[in-house]
Length: 172
Image (cartoon, rainbow, N blue to C red; front, side):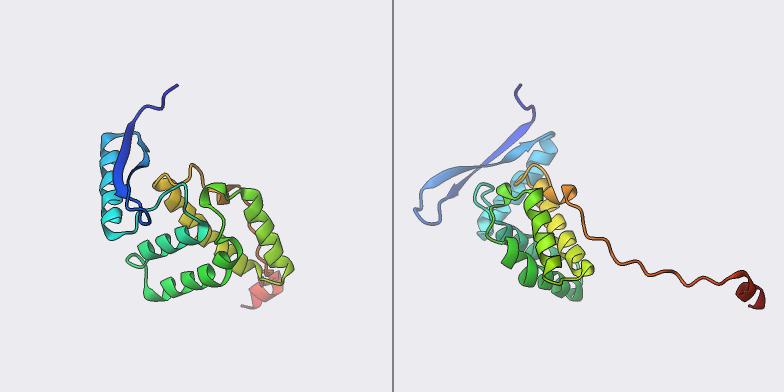
C-alpha cells in the first residue's frame, strides 16, 4: 500500500550543471513534521549545505552532524568528537555511501580496529559518534535505520571492585 503522510519536495539547482532539479526531502506522518523538515531543507539549500540522501557519504554525514553539534556542546566536547571523526571514522568508513553502510561492515571495522590494538574505550567512542550521526540521518530521512543499533560494541575491561571483608568492615 501507499505510505500515508506528507511528502516534502523542494527545488534546487545542480551545483555542476546549474539545472533545476526536485529533491525529495522525505515523507512525514504529520503536517507539522513536514513543515519543520521543509523549513530545515530550505534553510540548508539557501546556505549551500543541503544533503542529497542518494549521494551523501559517511564522511559528509559526519561533517554535517559535527556542524550541527558545534552549537549544542562545549568546545572541549566538540574537539573530542572531531578526533574520533577525523582520526578514526572518516579514514575507515568516510567514503562509504551512507545508504549502503551495513551493520556487518561497521562490525568488521570494530574488529579490525581491535586487532590493530585500539582500546575498547576508543572503539566505543567511535561507535557512539557514528551512532549519533546516523540518528541524525534517520531523523532527516537520509537513511531508514541506524545500522549501529545492530552492532555489538566491544566490552570494557572490568575492574574488580575493592570490597572490604567482614573483619575490615568491623575494624572500620
